[in-house]
Length: 300
Image (cartoon, rainbow, N blue to C red):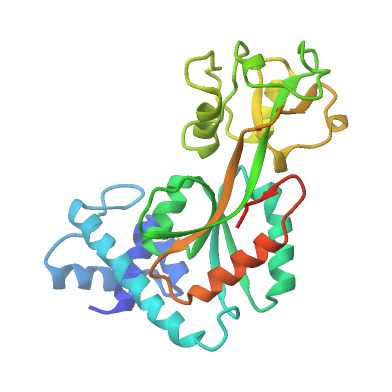
């Protein structure tokens, strides 16, 4: 059994198709098929159910794949340690980011990283928190920008900044002319939420409470939420970086909360056993030192 054979297994599991997996591995489909079959014969088990479309791992295949991903992650760990031992910022970093942060923070973060570390190459993947955590654990991601809390003892967490929430109200709302509002003043309004899986949904419920009226039509993005509020379906909370000036949408009003305003804490996270700790700490420190407008530094 070789590392390359394990890579073939993982590729086939990820793509669910021999042709696509072969292309990803830069080999022919017949070569991939032969190598996978050879490994199955060596192990004496069937790792994939070929009757399904897309092809899927068997129960035993799932267990083997879990171990294969861990082995490949450790092999990458060894390679990274030796390849970049002398210059930790001259490397490729696979960075995950949540959808409610990515479009609004990434342009700033990439500008900061590029200026500070021109040899650092960031490969970006926008996903919801559960998938990011799974990809961190399997080694498919190196680090991620997430909203706390992150309850995983395998991860290091470097808090970057606090991002306040603002109230998004329809322009015709009775409080739309106010300069500030409180959560209590909005307690009788219908709260619009993102769909299940978004950490911002859980944060909004934590801030506003679960014992209130909530709209069953759940949005898949902040932009959809913004439009739903604009047509008067309800209200919502928006992270500060995702807010625009009121002039950009005449039927929507963005209003700050009175102090103490609710907020979420954004952090850079990575595996505790990841190679080159200095890569993550230096990147995180640079992001902390160059914050975008609308967010607050965390007292050190």
